[in-house]
Length: 232
Image 1 (spheres, rainbow, N blue to C red):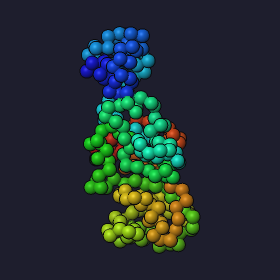
Image 2 (image 1 turned 30 degrees about the vertical axis):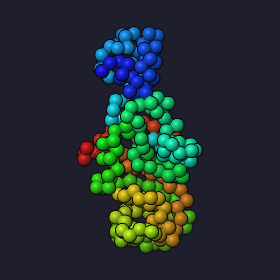
Image 3 (image 1 turned 180 degrees about the vertical axis):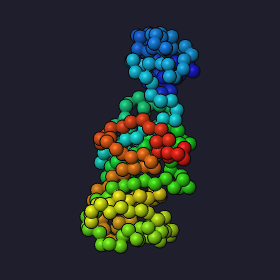
Image 4 (image 1 turned 90 degrees about the vertical axis):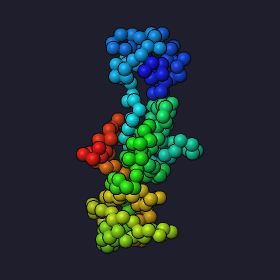
């Protein structure tokens, strides 16, 4: 691919910008300064400002989402994309979140620029588990685990029961809940259905990928294999 087309598709600037950067010596190809923005290049052999390029199409990013950020490109308020490098906003195709976390929910959120990858990670048919750390307002009464695992719990306003969910009790007000679905505000509504209230909600695992030591607002590149494990 031409150097200017490659870099512009990755969000490093317009083709005119890339021509300017090349003339100024910001770009190297196979270890040598490349001042010809029309040169045919291989992605892995290009350095921009002495750094390897971002991954090509099919990139997946994992972030620890802070509270108060919205998973949207267009809504008003603090948008999750503002925590990523500015150049990512200009990638073609566009980078999008894999599913959403509401404004008050923190933890593991994924991004990709590949629609097929996004569909593979969000399709209900895949039954990819997501694990949440849930802090409750009231102590557990004792029957929640059995109710959630039964596959019979109905949420208010819906006509189809939830799939079975697994719950690990950490304390009487702290649990880890694993769900395979992604219904609107599902975890909060599940606990509301059994007479409790979610005070804090953090996603700590998506498929096989754990939040780990990522600090709030930090991100890293991951692969679909990291998420799906042996399934990918």
